[in-house]
Length: 178
Image (cartoon, rainbow, N blue to C red):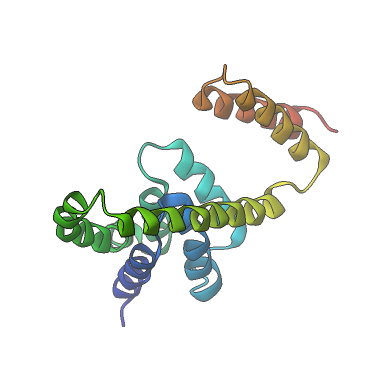
C-alpha cells in the first residue's frame, strides 16, 4: 500500500470514528499519527496542534493538512485532508434529512445528551496529554497561568492572548536567561 493511500485511510478512520469536533478528534489523531504510524514525534504533534489552533479552519482539518504535508508533501496534505473530511461529508449529506425530521425526538435528544459528557472527557484527555508535554518548566507554567488569567477575565480576545503568549515565550525563552 502506497503512502498516500495509507495517509488517506488513516485520516478517513480518524474522521469516521471521532465525534464532537476537532478537540475530540485529537486523542485519535495522536494515536494514529504519533503512536501507530510514527509519522511525527510527540513534540511535532504538540507544535502542529498549536499551529492548527492559530490558523483559520477546524483543528482536525488543519492538523491533517500539516501532517499530510510533513509526511508526503502537497499530495500527502491533499490525501489527509480528503480522508478526514470524507466520512463526515457523506454522513452529514445523508443524515441531514433525518436529523431535521427527528430533531425534536426524545431518542435524538437523549443520544446527544449522552454524547456531551464523552466529548468533555475526550477534551480533558487531550488537555492532560498536551499539558504533560507543554509544561516542562516553571516558565511554561507561568505563561500558562498568565494566559489562563487573561482568558478568564473575558476581556481578552483569544487571538490577542495567543500573541501575548508568543511575546512571553520570546521574553522567557529567548531574551531572559532564567
